[in-house]
Image (spheres, rainbow, N blue to C red):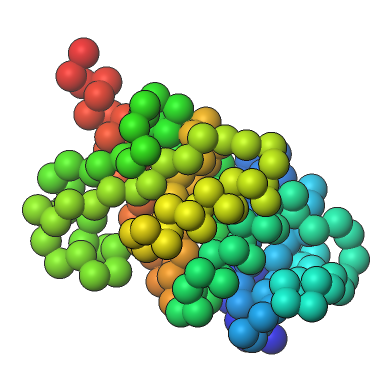
Length: 200
Protein backbone atom coordinates (compact mmCIF):
# COMPACT_ATOMS: atom_id res chain seq x y z
CA UNK A 1 0.00 0.00 0.00
CA UNK A 2 3.05 2.28 -0.18
CA UNK A 3 1.85 3.72 -3.49
CA UNK A 4 -1.48 4.62 -1.96
CA UNK A 5 0.23 6.19 1.06
CA UNK A 6 2.40 8.25 -1.30
CA UNK A 7 -0.65 9.41 -3.21
CA UNK A 8 -2.41 10.45 0.00
CA UNK A 9 0.63 12.56 0.89
CA UNK A 10 0.58 14.26 -2.51
CA UNK A 11 -3.17 14.83 -2.32
CA UNK A 12 -2.88 16.50 1.06
CA UNK A 13 0.01 18.62 -0.24
CA UNK A 14 -2.10 19.73 -3.22
CA UNK A 15 -4.91 20.71 -0.87
CA UNK A 16 -2.53 22.83 1.20
CA UNK A 17 -1.44 24.56 -2.02
CA UNK A 18 -5.11 25.42 -2.75
CA UNK A 19 -5.16 23.26 -5.87
CA UNK A 20 -8.27 21.34 -4.78
CA UNK A 21 -10.76 23.89 -3.40
CA UNK A 22 -14.23 22.80 -2.27
CA UNK A 23 -13.41 19.05 -2.51
CA UNK A 24 -12.51 19.58 -6.20
CA UNK A 25 -10.04 17.48 -8.14
CA UNK A 26 -9.37 13.77 -8.21
CA UNK A 27 -6.20 11.69 -7.81
CA UNK A 28 -5.33 8.17 -8.82
CA UNK A 29 -2.46 5.72 -8.89
CA UNK A 30 -2.04 2.47 -10.76
CA UNK A 31 -2.31 -0.76 -8.74
CA UNK A 32 -1.55 -3.16 -11.59
CA UNK A 33 -2.00 -3.48 -15.35
CA UNK A 34 -5.78 -3.12 -15.28
CA UNK A 35 -6.55 -1.54 -11.90
CA UNK A 36 -6.08 1.79 -10.16
CA UNK A 37 -7.08 3.48 -6.94
CA UNK A 38 -8.95 6.80 -7.31
CA UNK A 39 -10.35 9.29 -4.83
CA UNK A 40 -14.03 8.98 -4.03
CA UNK A 41 -16.28 11.83 -5.12
CA UNK A 42 -16.91 14.75 -2.78
CA UNK A 43 -14.16 13.98 -0.27
CA UNK A 44 -12.12 16.77 1.36
CA UNK A 45 -8.69 16.29 -0.20
CA UNK A 46 -6.99 17.60 2.91
CA UNK A 47 -8.43 14.84 5.11
CA UNK A 48 -8.04 11.74 2.97
CA UNK A 49 -7.44 8.27 4.34
CA UNK A 50 -7.01 4.97 2.51
CA UNK A 51 -10.77 4.35 2.93
CA UNK A 52 -11.49 7.36 0.72
CA UNK A 53 -10.05 5.60 -2.35
CA UNK A 54 -11.97 3.29 -4.63
CA UNK A 55 -10.40 0.45 -6.60
CA UNK A 56 -11.35 0.45 -10.28
CA UNK A 57 -10.66 -2.41 -12.67
CA UNK A 58 -11.38 -1.13 -16.19
CA UNK A 59 -10.94 -4.49 -17.89
CA UNK A 60 -13.41 -6.32 -15.67
CA UNK A 61 -15.55 -3.21 -15.10
CA UNK A 62 -15.51 -3.68 -11.32
CA UNK A 63 -15.58 -1.14 -8.49
CA UNK A 64 -14.49 -1.91 -4.93
CA UNK A 65 -14.71 0.49 -2.00
CA UNK A 66 -16.95 2.89 -0.14
CA UNK A 67 -18.47 5.98 -1.66
CA UNK A 68 -19.01 7.01 -5.26
CA UNK A 69 -16.20 6.94 -7.82
CA UNK A 70 -15.15 10.32 -9.14
CA UNK A 71 -17.21 11.47 -12.11
CA UNK A 72 -13.93 11.78 -14.02
CA UNK A 73 -12.81 8.20 -13.46
CA UNK A 74 -13.15 7.41 -17.18
CA UNK A 75 -10.47 9.93 -18.09
CA UNK A 76 -8.04 8.55 -15.50
CA UNK A 77 -8.53 4.99 -16.66
CA UNK A 78 -8.18 6.02 -20.31
CA UNK A 79 -4.79 7.60 -19.58
CA UNK A 80 -3.60 4.39 -17.91
CA UNK A 81 -4.70 2.41 -20.94
CA UNK A 82 -3.04 4.78 -23.40
CA UNK A 83 0.37 4.54 -21.72
CA UNK A 84 1.36 1.61 -19.50
CA UNK A 85 4.20 3.74 -18.08
CA UNK A 86 1.80 6.16 -16.42
CA UNK A 87 1.65 5.34 -12.71
CA UNK A 88 -0.09 8.38 -11.23
CA UNK A 89 -2.65 10.90 -12.52
CA UNK A 90 -3.33 14.15 -10.65
CA UNK A 91 -6.29 16.38 -11.53
CA UNK A 92 -6.36 19.82 -9.93
CA UNK A 93 -8.47 22.98 -10.08
CA UNK A 94 -6.11 25.89 -9.53
CA UNK A 95 -7.35 29.37 -10.39
CA UNK A 96 -4.40 29.99 -12.75
CA UNK A 97 -4.85 26.80 -14.78
CA UNK A 98 -8.61 27.27 -14.97
CA UNK A 99 -8.40 30.89 -16.14
CA UNK A 100 -5.56 30.38 -18.62
CA UNK A 101 -7.24 27.41 -20.23
CA UNK A 102 -10.45 29.40 -20.67
CA UNK A 103 -8.56 32.29 -22.30
CA UNK A 104 -6.90 30.01 -24.85
CA UNK A 105 -8.74 29.58 -28.14
CA UNK A 106 -6.21 27.03 -29.44
CA UNK A 107 -5.96 23.28 -28.91
CA UNK A 108 -2.54 23.64 -27.30
CA UNK A 109 -1.14 26.00 -24.68
CA UNK A 110 2.51 26.89 -25.36
CA UNK A 111 4.86 27.95 -22.58
CA UNK A 112 7.46 30.51 -23.57
CA UNK A 113 11.07 30.89 -22.41
CA UNK A 114 10.62 29.83 -18.78
CA UNK A 115 13.48 28.02 -17.04
CA UNK A 116 11.02 26.00 -14.93
CA UNK A 117 10.08 23.98 -18.01
CA UNK A 118 13.12 21.82 -17.26
CA UNK A 119 11.26 20.17 -14.36
CA UNK A 120 9.19 18.32 -16.96
CA UNK A 121 10.38 14.85 -17.93
CA UNK A 122 12.57 14.95 -21.03
CA UNK A 123 12.99 18.75 -21.12
CA UNK A 124 16.61 19.84 -20.74
CA UNK A 125 16.51 23.43 -22.02
CA UNK A 126 14.35 26.49 -21.48
CA UNK A 127 14.33 26.82 -25.27
CA UNK A 128 12.48 23.51 -25.73
CA UNK A 129 8.93 23.95 -26.97
CA UNK A 130 6.51 22.80 -24.28
CA UNK A 131 2.87 22.57 -25.18
CA UNK A 132 -0.06 21.23 -23.19
CA UNK A 133 -3.06 19.95 -25.11
CA UNK A 134 -6.30 21.83 -24.42
CA UNK A 135 -9.71 20.18 -24.67
CA UNK A 136 -13.15 21.74 -24.42
CA UNK A 137 -14.93 20.91 -21.20
CA UNK A 138 -17.61 18.24 -21.39
CA UNK A 139 -19.93 16.84 -18.74
CA UNK A 140 -19.84 13.58 -20.69
CA UNK A 141 -16.47 12.35 -19.37
CA UNK A 142 -16.39 9.11 -21.42
CA UNK A 143 -16.85 11.24 -24.55
CA UNK A 144 -14.02 13.54 -23.43
CA UNK A 145 -11.86 10.49 -22.75
CA UNK A 146 -12.49 9.29 -26.31
CA UNK A 147 -11.40 12.67 -27.72
CA UNK A 148 -8.23 12.44 -25.66
CA UNK A 149 -7.65 8.94 -27.04
CA UNK A 150 -8.16 10.05 -30.64
CA UNK A 151 -5.70 12.90 -30.28
CA UNK A 152 -3.19 10.74 -28.40
CA UNK A 153 -3.20 8.14 -31.16
CA UNK A 154 -2.17 10.84 -33.64
CA UNK A 155 0.46 12.36 -31.34
CA UNK A 156 1.00 11.03 -27.78
CA UNK A 157 0.56 13.70 -25.11
CA UNK A 158 3.27 14.50 -22.61
CA UNK A 159 3.14 15.73 -19.01
CA UNK A 160 -0.53 16.67 -18.91
CA UNK A 161 -3.53 18.32 -20.50
CA UNK A 162 -5.86 21.21 -19.78
CA UNK A 163 -9.64 21.07 -19.84
CA UNK A 164 -10.86 24.51 -20.82
CA UNK A 165 -12.33 26.42 -17.89
CA UNK A 166 -11.95 23.37 -15.68
CA UNK A 167 -8.40 22.49 -14.70
CA UNK A 168 -5.26 20.43 -15.20
CA UNK A 169 -4.57 16.72 -15.55
CA UNK A 170 -0.93 15.78 -15.07
CA UNK A 171 0.78 12.40 -14.93
CA UNK A 172 4.14 10.69 -14.59
CA UNK A 173 5.89 7.36 -14.11
CA UNK A 174 6.10 7.84 -10.32
CA UNK A 175 3.96 9.65 -7.79
CA UNK A 176 6.95 11.77 -6.75
CA UNK A 177 7.60 12.85 -10.33
CA UNK A 178 3.91 13.60 -10.83
CA UNK A 179 4.01 15.91 -7.81
CA UNK A 180 7.18 17.60 -9.06
CA UNK A 181 5.69 18.18 -12.51
CA UNK A 182 2.43 19.44 -11.03
CA UNK A 183 4.32 21.98 -8.93
CA UNK A 184 6.38 23.03 -11.95
CA UNK A 185 3.33 23.41 -14.18
CA UNK A 186 1.54 25.48 -11.55
CA UNK A 187 4.60 27.75 -11.38
CA UNK A 188 4.45 28.14 -15.15
CA UNK A 189 0.74 28.98 -15.04
CA UNK A 190 1.33 31.64 -12.42
CA UNK A 191 4.27 33.07 -14.38
CA UNK A 192 2.07 33.30 -17.49
CA UNK A 193 -0.70 35.08 -15.58
CA UNK A 194 1.70 37.62 -14.05
CA UNK A 195 3.45 38.17 -17.36
CA UNK A 196 0.16 38.97 -19.09
CA UNK A 197 -0.83 41.33 -16.30
CA UNK A 198 2.47 43.22 -16.53
CA UNK A 199 2.19 43.52 -20.32
CA UNK A 200 -1.02 45.54 -20.03
